[in-house]
Amino acid sequence: MGLPNMDELSFTDSELDHHVRNALKAAIQGDCDFYNQLVAVIHHKEALVTEEVALLVTCLKAMIGAVSCVHIVHHRSLLAAILSMSLWDYGTDVMDALVELLIALASSNGDYVDICLEMLVMNFMPSPAAQSARGLSKKIQVLDRVHSTLEDISNLVPLTPLRLQNLVRDKMPPIYMKEHVIMIYAENIMRLESGVMGELVGSTGLVALMEKLIEFDVEISWEDIVQDDFHKGMFDIEVEDLENHADDIVHDGDELTRDVLIQRFLSTNLSAQKLDSLMVLTFEYLKSCSEGGRLVQVFETLLQSFQKTTLTAYKSKFAQFIMFYACSLDPENCGKMFASTLIDIYVSGLNHEWRMSAVAYLASYLARAKFIPVSFVAAMLERVVSCCFLYCKNQNGNINPKAHKLFYAGCQAIMYVLCFRMNQLLVIPRLKSQLLLMRIDNILGHHLSPLQVCLPSIVEEFLLLVKENRIFSLPETVVEHGLLESEHSRIFGGIKRLDMFFPFDPCLLRKCDSYIRPNYVYWSMVRSTYYEDDEVEGTSDEDVAEAYECGNGMNIPDDRSKGGEDSDGDEFDSRLDKMSITPRDSSHKFGGRMQRFTQMPSKIRPSTSPESL
Image (cartoon, rainbow, N blue to C red; front, side, top):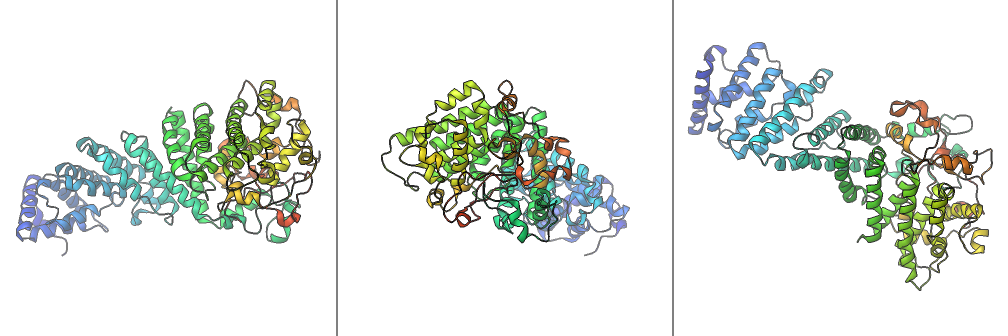
């Protein structure tokens, strides 16, 4: 049916209220003439002229006074017309009348609460017709009304926040939606979290956001990242090995720049691009929470979500950097809380794989977080050592990677952290004494033989440091000779290869990296003096001592941090020697034996995942 004749609806407001009420009652009795005209007015959306807009506003306002006459069954078509309206498609007069009607409907009958809330949540995102620049420019107008209406309904219907929880989670746009739609929805989640309903709805929304980050993360397969042999060894791979596989890539002299590799990865992966933008939005929100004194409260929610989603998502490659960045904003509270939670899971958790994942996160975090005080690193390391010492003290058997995988995971974590932190610990007398009293040599020299089970590349680097610094009483044959590459680490790592999982290896997401970089320890910053001078300038004890002032985190000069988080792509001129030392199986390269004291290459690739093998 077409629009009713304007002359036929020449009523005063009070008369129209009366006619609308009668039309609703008549429709229940089967007389739908005026009711159908009312539905037609509300349903008509395209190219409204001034008179049609005025009529629509008048009808919506008339409906407000007649909500008590609305029946959820008999007036189904009218409710459908109202609830299909999008605030993004109208001017402010229609917006105001529509949200007033929604408030009236929700407060008049409990049956209408959920459908009104669902409509408002759907207005978190622009309608398809409004996804132009003009539509997006109305974001403030629309979203201010959406959130104020949610608060008004919450004041009238106290259970609104509980009902809104599931809606916020369920209506999260799928990952194939356009990036700006997903971003707008995420902004609304953050706005809910910081609003009056944040304690209930906000925490659910943040959890949903973390789950969406993981969904994007898992969508990016490791094969996408490791194509063209992008990942290999920890100490054994020179970037020049890639030259035969990457003739189409621009070279900086004889070197593949990190910038080029990242650009190649991101330019072909829409999920990575969306994830990058969504994480940066989250970083900015966390920064605002920190400035507003709310970060610890928000971090507690993130930490709970991390334990349920990220920690158990063994394919996670990037989402965990949300935790890293939050910790960097408040090292004293969030930073220490995160590490303490990880060590607690490792020491007393129930699921063995989760415990192994937790100690991998802890090792990577302690190694990479520049903001963590070295004294705290020592304290966390001591807890891992104590756990391993108590374990092996009661063991009489020999090597068994499956049976003792938690022990081997802890030993590998100890060596990994010390590869990054040993020199800093040794130049501070108190911490050196603490390190030497930890009985690390008792653990590594135990007949469970962790040095033969843990990743040879990590063991090799650790033994180089032991020899250089003349610490720990390890068997002479172990220190003096290279180690056999065996299948032991494969066995204790399990099908997920948790022996090769170092979650805080350098982030390949370009925009995210600019936030992480200023607080991040790259291998080139800390690798030892036994490498040749033309590869890297050695770090003296005095330099290391100066890096620690009053127990604070590392104070390592780093040109990468200049310019802050707004820095552009020029900051990506750092070579691949700034990247991870995380290993990939290298038995194919060495024929079963590691080279004795292999030198660190000047350019090394980022982390490999447990799925890349």
